[in-house]
Image (cartoon, rainbow, N blue to C red; front, side):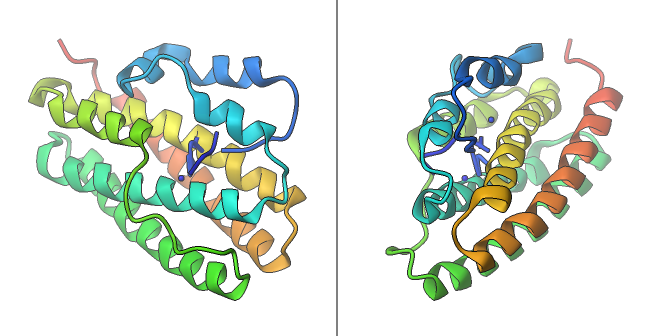
Amino acid sequence: MERLIIAGASSLSLAACGTSDNGSNAQDLQSDGAVDKMGTVDNPDVAQAKAQPSDDAQLYVSTAAIGDLYEIEASRLALQKARSAQVKASAKQMIADHSQTTGQLKTLATAQDVGRALPTELDPRHKAMLDTLKAASNAAFDKTYLDQQTVAHQEALLLHANYASKGKFDRLKAFATATLQMVQHHAAMVKQLSGATAPAS
C-alpha cells in the first residue's frame, strides 16, 4: 500500500489511475472528514500513483504491500482498543485477508523479478495515520478506525482496479483482479459498520 495513490489505495493504498483529473479523485477521498482522521489533509500518494505508468509493477507491488502492512497494524490495534464487537470481528478479517495477500504478493514479486523485497515498514504517511489511531481516545477509536478504513479502501480500489485493467504482467493482473474483489467486500463491510457506529461524543 507504496508510493501510491490510497492506497485513495494509498495502497495499497491501497493507489494509481494514470489519468489527468487528479483533483477530483483526491477531493472525493477527503469527503466526510475521513482524511482529517488519517492525520493528513491532502493525499499526495493518490496524485503520485495516478501519474505513474499503469504497468509499473514495482510501484504497484510496493504500494500494495504497504497498504497490506498498514491494514494489518491498524487492525491489530483495533483488536485491542475497539469497543464494538463488530469492529473487532472486521479487524480480525482484515488481518487474515491482508496477511494472505501479502504472502501471495511476495511470491509474485519474486516470480516477476520486480527488483526488490517487499517493504517491511510503513511510509511516513501511513505511520502518521497509525499514530493518529494510537492517539485516539477509547470513545473516538472506533469512528477513527472506520474513517481511516474508508479512505484506505478507496485507495486500494483504485490501485488494484488500475493494475487489473492496465498492468503489464498477467500474473500480477490476475492477483490485482482477485484482490480487487476482496477490497470491494472490505469496503462494503466498512461502509455498513460506519453507518451502524454512532459518532463519538
